Image (cartoon, rainbow, N blue to C red):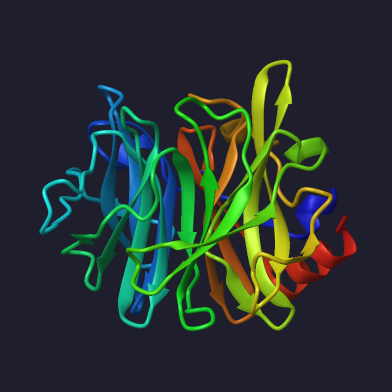
Length: 306
């Protein structure tokens, strides 16, 4: 199959299951980064009371993980900045020695994006929520664009959104966000219902590589898979190429069977040389990993573009 020539699933998938945390019902849709010679991660842990919380994890190889059994406790100088007991789908971006964490808080007004920074994965300083509810996905670019912090986000609603477009925004300070620009929305086939940003974009000579999730609605509900786009380096709201064909689709049992079936949700991508390691949530139950050549991913996007 064409998608298998781009990303190759790790033979030991799933690499993380609920067994990693005593109270876990499931662990999925999480964020992983390189940290010195090791790896660190912020993991979505759905607990046995079905609250979902963020936990820190560490690994020497990015495959075998030790995850803290207790949730992260954010620090903030403002008590009105909140973390709910339903916090989920984190992303991490490294900028210099600082790691920027974004995630989604479920609240009465709808899902709301949270933002915090850390340098040591021990202390997490929470900032003001960058966007008002409802918004379900947010990822920060790994470098400033035109002198400002930049993000991709996806406005939502209070429910399990039956729509979704990707937008760009920028900020001078990680607090005040504006210059919102439409990037792209649903477009036929496997991405006909909604789309959303996945891992933070990766700079390439051909543009910003964005791996994103696309959703279509079958007679059995939503089906999530992964595609890719190349965005203009100076104006990332301008799409240069975007995949007509998916790059990964839920075909394995652990991707098809779980708390939410038929979900392949890309959330982290590590680039070392020409090698991409992609981490993704599987059926809202566990975490899988797939690998690819950056060169081949870019080639695939250009060849299979609309």
